[in-house]
Image (cartoon, rainbow, N blue to C red; front, side, top):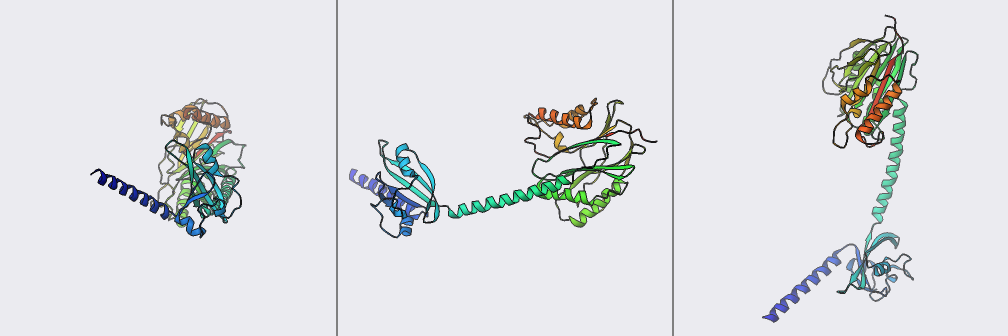
Length: 383
C-alpha cells in the first residue's frame, strides 16, 4: 500500500515536471539557466532553435556571439544581491529585455540563475514612433493655441470704457472664448462663449465663432440668429454646441442691448456707488443643430457712469473644494459687490478667492476653462 502511494506521488511529480518543461518550451521568450561559473546548464526550445547549436556547458556569453562577459551582467548582480535584476541588451542587432532571477536551495543559497530574454525590438520601435508622433502633435497643438490666443482681444477702446479679462484653458486648447470690438464710433460689441468639450474640436469652434459672428449688426439677436444658420451650414454634423452671450454698448447714450444663446451663467451689471446689482438672465437656444429656427430676443438696459458689466463662464463657479462644494454664484457675487477697485484688480481678487476656497494654486488642477471679463463705463453718456 505504501509503495503504491509512493509510486503515485512520484508519477505526480514527474507529470508536474513534464508540464513545467512543456510550458517553458512553449514560451516564445528565451529561457536559460546559468550556473555560478557563467556556464549554460539549460536552454529552452525557443532559444535553442534560434541559436542552432549545442551551448550546454559553455559560457553564457558565447551563446550570444560574444567573447567576454557582458559589461552590465545582471546575472552576477543577482547572485550577489540575491534579488531579481533587469536590463535591456542588444543581442544580434535586436533589443532584448533581460530578467535575471536567482535560484536558491532550501537553505536560501543561490545555486544558479534563470534568465528570461524577451525581444522588445518592435515595441521599442513603436515607442519611438509614438514619441515622435506625440512631439509632432504637441507642436501642432501649440500652434493651434497660438492661433486661438491671437484672436483674443488686443485693440480695446479705452477712452469710453475700461476693460480687463482673464482667459485660462484647463487644457492646451480651451473651449471658452471672448472678444470685444468697436462696431462704429458709438457702439462696442462684447461676447463671451463656451463650447461644450475641450481640445482641438472645441478650439476650432472658437475660431469659427470669431470669424463668423457678424460684427456690423447692431442687434445681438440678429447676429446670433445668423451665426446659428452658419453653424448649421458648416457644422451640422457636429455633436458639440456653443453657448454665447452677446451685448452691444451704445457709448453715446450708455445703453446696453443684449441677447443670449444658451449661456447658462448670467452676466452681472453692478455699481458699488449706487448699490446697483442686476443679473442679466435671458433664455435662448445654444448655437447647435438642435432646432431648425431658434428665436433670439434683444433686451435693453440703461447704464450709468461707473457701472460694470461682468461676464464669465461656468468654470469659476464650478470650481470645487475638498468637500466637493462649488465656489458658486453667491461667493462670486460677494467678491464683486462693494468692490471699488479697477476691473483688473477685481478679476484677480476673484481668482484669489476661488483659489483659497478650492485650496489650490491659481489656475492649477481646474476641471474646466476659466474665462472672465469686466467692463466699466467711463463716460456719462448723452441721454
